[in-house]
Length: 215
Image (cartoon, rainbow, N blue to C red; front, side, top):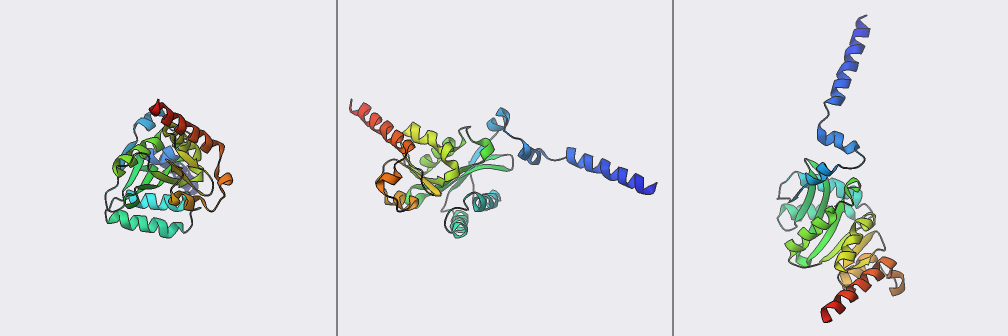
């Protein structure tokens, strides 16, 4: 009898614990975010010492694992961010990391943009990108991102008529095709191998934009 009551109490306690889960944890099981959650996102730059930087580091080690030497890369970013030399912006829902952007001011480049898959298609990458070029003081800066983000970044290439190099684990968003940093990021591919339908479309859009200015 005692064992039965103890078991029953344990079941009741377990059920109460499940229903007592905080909203931020329960949200992670939701297939798609609601409109209310999208509108509740907070975009901010992390200050040195912000505990959210640890979440950015842990997430980057997983999401950017295809980068060569990813651990030294992110450790350098964490150290430089703590020294105030490497701006990092995030999108968050309460204490949940939804997206991040890492800048490299000395090169006027965006080192990475990432958005949680469940939140993609809601304009989060575009908003982070806009905060990036405002912070860098450069319109349409060179931007690197993992291949998994290609669909999220494609609207930026089309909107701003940028060249999208989409080969290799690290893709690059460029305003033109003359930057050595972009060539190094996508590897030693031939000119013909680099051209993709997306890039050709972006190039056509750029030419149309230039032609409209001249007209």
